[in-house]
Image 1 (tube, helix red, strand yellow):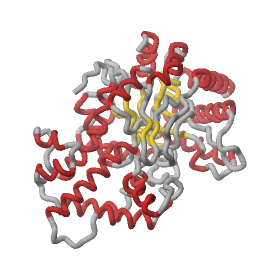
Image 2: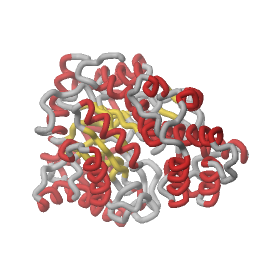
Image 3: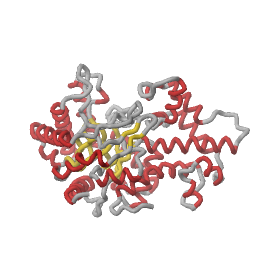
Image 4: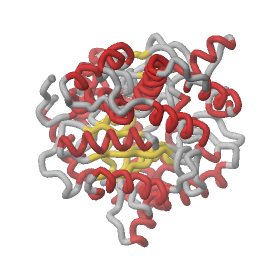
Length: 437
């Protein structure tokens, strides 16, 4: 990492962390999930490391109308705070972020109607104490093209920034920091096999910064532009339903060098799920210091759930009730709205994707009452001490930690450990002093 990029990192993270952290990390993982076990695992890891936790919600997931989780920004914050209280994690060490904040949830409305609702959403995020806002107004509304010109995108982003600044002033809150830029993969990953990705061009990143600076000035919120800490770009990482595109530093070299001409800014990388530990470390080395992860964590959790279900079948051969995959299949087939537009192929291919896709759209169904009951029954039917040999057979991710005594051989602890195993490479990549375990 160049001295200039390192200085950018210090400036950006000083604005993000405020007084929370004196020793600044090389980077930070942004956990984008509303699953309580994922949130708990993330907070436990942050607690063990003495670090700040960055937890983010998306505009479709959480908004003033409830989103698909049924939570407003204030309700989401209470939800996270309750988990923190349960495990003794100090809530002031949680940074709440809003991702893809813009008109996307209301894209079928006219632009003015959708933007009006987006302003209300941003205000609700700020009023609830969210401090990091990714402004994403790139997607067209009714009667518009799917992707909008840079200048219009920036104009709408500035409008949302003004709403956020005004809301912070009214609420007497510290004004938020911002992420701009829209060159991101589709939320939740691509829907097809991907061989190569086009890395954001260096000049495109420069243009993003320039048009936003002009739009923020025009909207009379230059102080908000001063608190832009990062730009979302495509460094060449992505996952589809069945494959992952790994980071290749040589392809992003020109883009990474652009940070030398962007004082105080970082790049934010989305869809870093399933990258190798080396890839994540290289991303941070190159200035992509904010690493978003979400489906990769619930994918690890689903693996653990299904592994425990297989263990239950061995321990309780006389059991006649349905198994967890069959119960989840029935729920997803009965409510296809979260996967039908994303999974394609024959009936067998779509069945495989429903359960095992890297996009992990099964994550939308774990909060369903039938799914909650199924998981609760699974945990209740397993013994307090699960045999190590079965953990070796079905939970290879966490078996070494069980044998070493670091993880109790209990169902819930094994699930938390599985999620933590997916978080561990991020800790290595973002640590102040990187040490390979």
